[in-house]
Length: 88
Image: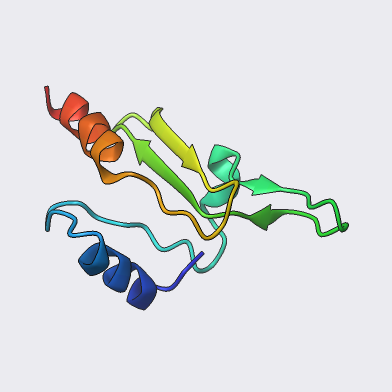
């Protein structure tokens, strides 16, 4: 849901490879397609938590990380490993 400006900052902060693209779902058009929404205990519906998906060209999710303990960040290596698996 973060803007592409925020994703550019994450990309730089995490030292991600240039070819790794981060999707900004700023208009809330994609998260629901991959089960990225949840309802909170306080009653908020369809909230998106920070989630990392690696999606194969056929639309299959090959890796997923959900941030269940903010402000934690995902480990980069499992994401890169999933991406390497796509190009193998």
